[in-house]
Image 1 (tube, rainbow, N blue to C red):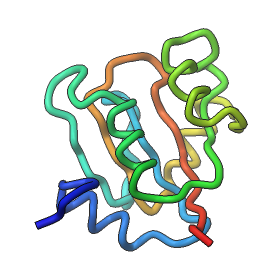
Image 2: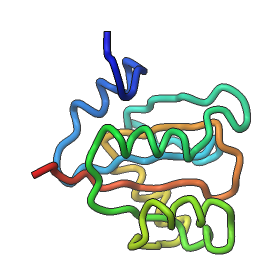
Image 3: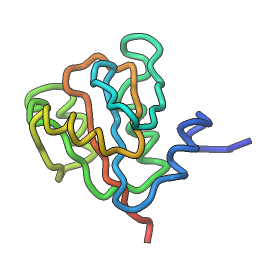
Image 4: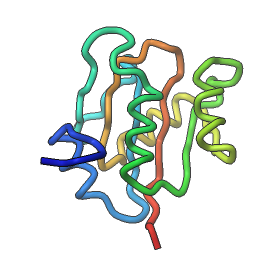
Length: 127
């Protein structure tokens, strides 16, 4: 039995398979899931679990060297959440972000219903 960190077995397994440079998508409940990408669907109802709660859990368990967001996030509540955690993030169009998600090694769907609460995280290394 784990003492700390992520308890979801499927999410733990997905994180354990990641390597340097791999992409992880953390998505709101509306972002299209690309075919062929492993998905951990945590969505229960709108707003549960929250994007920031899932993002914070991932940041506590794994190393990410970069974050890519949609330019459309500007001026939204999601921009504040992302800026607090990734002061230096890259921005691409929402369409480009959706295209990037097709190359992800892991797609994590939250119950978030805030517009553009999506991020593509690039795995780093702890050394």
